[in-house]
Length: 189
Image (tube, rainbow, N blue to C red; front, top):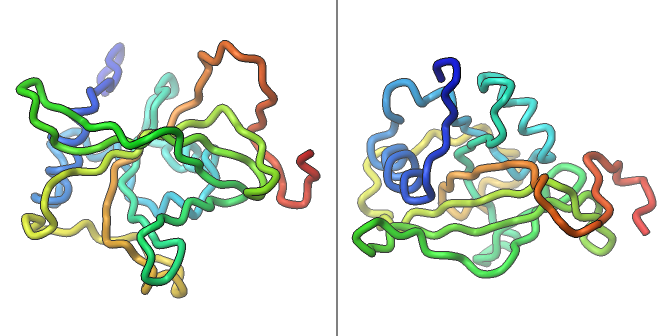
């Protein structure tokens, strides 16, 4: 981005311009390829993903990724949300992404990152918006080449590609314990 400019797309813009174009055409508009990384997002901690995104300006507060989604259970539809030394937890219900004309073009999920194991996780300041297109799969002309998945997860692929925006929630008015990094061996009481 040119100096003094920030990338602040709307939810509808993310689905219509970037996610749909990546799925249908196979590439992003000229000049925007460096803002989005293809990564198997759920194999990494939130803070590690930001480090991977070296192309962005230092003052960037939102980081964007295209990622596949894997199943939690064989033959199931529940996504696997374990990531590095923590997990992403869905907050609320999917929200429709609506164009100015009222057309629903996709959906947005909000997730919080918890450090540690599911039973004892500690909520961190990391948040994610996960965008899904409503585009029928038979209209996808060019599929995004998948990052090399771990061999054991190949049959677990849900074959859904999503666009994710990750950011730090610094606006929290509630006092709560937050952590940027917790080792799995740490006691999280």
